[in-house]
Amino acid sequence: MKITGKLAVVASLIAGMGAASLAQAHGIWFAQRSNQLALIYGLGGDDLDVIKRQQKVKSVSAYDEQGKEVSTQLTPSGPLLVVNTDNQPAIVAGIMDNGLWSKTADGKWYNKGKDEVPNATISEHTFKYAVHLRRPLDGAMPVLPAQKLQIVPVGKQLPDQMGQPLTVRVLFDGKPAPGAKVQPDLLNDPDSEPLKTGADGTVTIKVRNQGLNVVVAILDTPPSEPAKTNSDEHEATLSFVLQHLPE
Figure 1 (tube, helix red, strand yellow):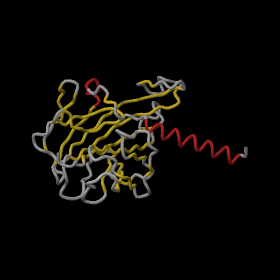
Figure 2: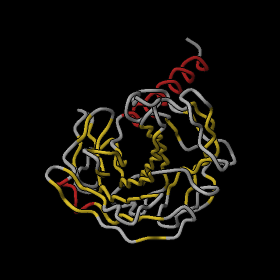
Figure 3: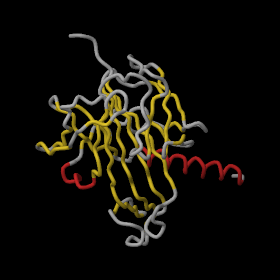
């Protein structure tokens, strides 16, 4: 095999590892559970125990159609963390600091930095962000300063039918994030090959579901604690519901 062929194989393997990393990254999003809006932590169809991770949830906030913040709170209710929607917010957002994670060659993950797992092959500080649209907005979606990584629909209206195109812009610190990896459906197709945002931070996907949609984006940045991790992983979701036909 020629050297160029070997390099192509290596590049392909690295790309595959990147896709696998995205597919295996648990996220947070908001979804209706028994007529209540709940904060979910999981991957695909798996809802994991969010109650034991409650201390990692750093904030939950709510906004009206114009992006003005309204009061809300997150309350445990059985196995769920439920959002108070008494003020009828149009947008709900959350942030989780999921801590330091290191992976060893045998595939095991440890909730520690590489300083405590010296044989780690991957070591990262993971942050989770979530934005949920409860109803149509009066205009373009506002940029939420607390959301370090945010998925923002381009334009003033979302599609109303599955299969229609949706252009989104991924922002990091409020600025376009080129090279962010985006998947259109974290719930039902978490193993799909991610698309990458362009220089302007945008990418066009197809709306996957006539129901709950959870779009996910991941961006790796240089480590905030180089002695403990090799990178910071920021994962953001944008969730919204397309209405079904009347019964």
